[in-house]
Length: 147
Image (cartoon, rainbow, N blue to C red):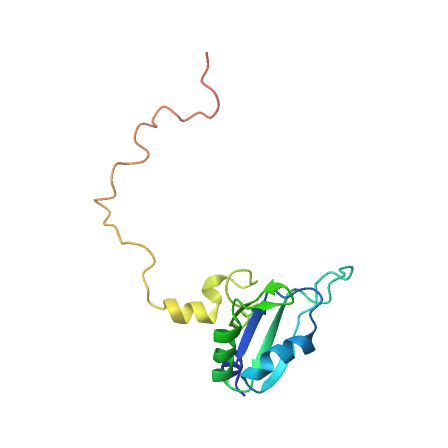
């Protein structure tokens, strides 16, 4: 299955209680269609006592099944917590957008989106307004004025 199609068939399940396991999530979502995979990301820190980070990704065989799961499971109660079930979004590339180590204008996506676009309004030289340097004639010496 193509990556775009995979993400359309995947739901994000947020608000999971710490005691919930992936098999329990699977059991809760299986009525809506064939499930390909259930992933529950682990916490970043090694000393954490939680088995997961409080959310899961459930990948369905069909995107329509994912939509059905969202419609039926969003705002439902699961192990005493209210679930937030929504369409999963594809992760952003580490090479794209803010936070990447590449300059914004060197990124392929940005160039394609903004090619030939004018960044700011073009102002004629005559209508630039008053000279910002006007009135600064006597300030050729730095520092406080002598008393």
